[in-house]
Image (tube, helix red, strand yellow):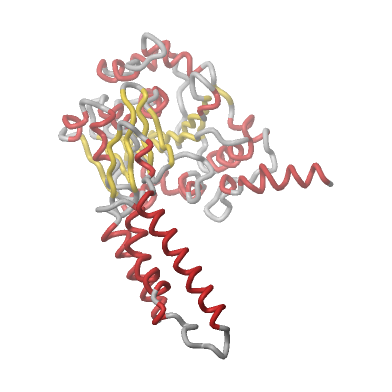
Length: 377
């Protein structure tokens, strides 16, 4: 019972009480200090006075070892450095979910969540918004992005002068929007702007709103535990209920190997009748853009896609290049189109990714264990 209460109180006290206010290093120090004190106090030692079980010399050695470990722990606590100190220029925020670091300047800005690099300023994240919106055969009325990140995709949605919603799991992430985009305060105060703190999948399961475009920007790496819940067939069934008639899902798949590509492609193919997929411009290693819909996707030309955009959206698309106008920006992407069947053919035995079959998360088995077995047998 004591252990159970400790697990409950410890998690709430550390995660909700102390971590949002002080660094993880000092949270560890505060919560481990009672046990450190017990170990260093001879009166509380379970072996004190047990001469029948161990010699006086053995007891002295054990106490000395305990003191040495205690001194080492205190030294490490006092001299250790938090992860964020490695960044010269930084903004740090903490909440009950994570520690968030924004670092860098100019176009070399980065976002870290619990020490994991999440995203950087890139035209790729702009295309996640502009590509599906331009592919619509009607003017969009609203759009949704799952995962806020630096807010680049959300900012691009708002450039279409329509209501846009962003769903983000970590409360502090949208609070750093200003660090990456100077116009962030004005955008957040716009009547078209709606930021929701929630799990993206849970939000889609609970809301009754429908969207012309839903763009999914899962946090990298693609192997991250739980990331499969934003690529699975069950997730796509939920997405279909939230798409307005003629709506489009944009699914970004960051990097991954042939099995990852095939598993996601097969899940999409088994969920949507109409699909198109493009390697991310300018380098294939930056992942894939999937477009999925319950209605046919038109074969628009780059010029037609550019003509669908309001001027504000066209300016946003080419803000960071690499092309000089929207037509050429779209043209460069359309040239890298591939097919769902081709992706599946690269790993034909890969099953469709499902909640209970998170293929992307079994990367160690696939990339380390199986190749080693093949080499030896």
